[in-house]
Amino acid sequence: MPRARVPFAAGRLWLDFVNTDEAPRHAHADTLVSFDGYLAWLESAALIDAARRTSLQRRAQEQPASATAALHEARRIRSMLRPLAERGLLTSERATQAAILEINRVLGRSTGIRRVEHDPRDGSFQRAFVPSGDAFAALVIPIVESAADTLVMGELARVRRCAAEPPCPRVFLDISRNGRRRWCDMRSCGNRAKAARHRVTTRVSRPTPPVP
Image (cartoon, rainbow, N blue to C red):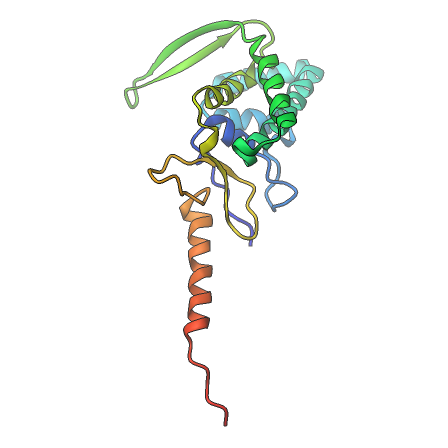
């Protein structure tokens, strides 16, 4: 039975981005299989709004090669970030340096205006980045900045891969007090693990019928 998708449960934007890749190990399709899928995820993550998504879709029709290049870059960045997400501080030095190189490459072109925006619907405040230059290439900047923040703030030691069996590829930031969170989401993998343990316990505790 395929796992239900658990969007934005990882605790950090870059980890949710890594979690967009569940194929081919699971029945879910890769979220980044198309540029439209990439834009849909960005809108779900509140990195663009509906009007911006429509504008980018129009531009993608006019500049298909640029849109394809942006999608391929997003997929490459995700593949570079996954080792950090899965292994945390145990990531090999080679993989760590490759991820840092990719992060710095993107940050090096992150020119634009940073601002704070207020959402009157719930009174919340969010940081916003209005890029200058290539609109497609700038889409990944907030994701890479999220990964950089995790490294600088020393959070990598708390990055985990879900401990579910069969293996679940999702990753998350463990912000629990004791640092022992095991599941990407309690409602899916956590409850499934509890049910599996209950079945095993029930079988073990069930008395053996007498031999006739």
